[in-house]
Image (cartoon, rainbow, N blue to C red; front, side):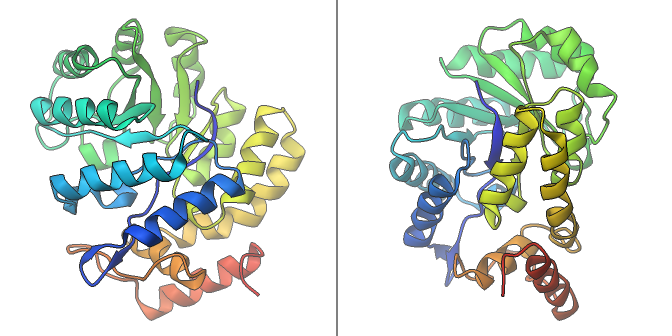
Length: 291
C-alpha cells in the first residue's frame, strides 16, 4: 500500500504563521523529485505546537497541492483518544489517503490500553491507520504481540517503527503478515530496516534530499543493495547532522539553504547554533546538495 521514501514534511513558518505558499511549493517539489507519499503534521511538521486550525489548514494544503499524484498520510495522533478520533475523521473528510497515529505519550497506557485506543480510532473512520511507535518520545513501546493484535483490524495498515530495533522487523513481518506495511521512522537505520523486511521510511532527510532518498529506497525495493548502500553513504553524514540539535531546527536550516523555507521554528524548539549550521552545510555539500 505505502512504500519508498515518504517525507515527514516540515511546516514552513514566516513571522509566526504558516507560510502557505512555501508549504505548497515544497509539496510540489517533493512530488516532482520522486517521493512516494507525503506526511503533513507529523512531529517534524511541529504538530505539537500547531493549533487545531493550523493542523487542519496544513493537511488541506497538502491534499490540495498533491492533487492525487501521491498519497497523503496525515498526522492525526494524540494522547487523547477523542482528539485522535477527531483528527482522523477530519483527515478522511479532507481527502487524505491514510493517517499516522502515534502511541499515546505521557499517559503511559498498558498494552491493552493501546489496543483499545487504536481500535477506537480505526473504528471511527474508514481510512487506513499507520501506527507510529516511537518510545523515545512517547515513553511507551508497543510490543510485537500488541502490533499483531492490531494488524487483525482491517484498516490498521502498518507501522512507522522508530525503535531502532532491527530484530523487531522480521518479527513484525512474521506476526503481522505480508500485507502489513513496515516503514522505518529513522533515516540512519532505514537501509538496515529495509534489508530486514521493511518497505521504506517516513523520513526527515527527504525534506531536503528527496531525489536521493527516493532512489535509495527504490534500490532497496529492487533488491539492489549495492546501489542503495552507495546512496546511503552519501546521505549518512546528513542524517546525523540534522539531529545534532532538536528537530526540526536542523532540517529547517537545511531547507533555508535550498530556499525552501525560513529557519523559523516554534518554542520550545530553537534554531540551530552556528557550529551545527557549519556541520549541516558541510554534510549537504558532501551529499551533492550544495555547491
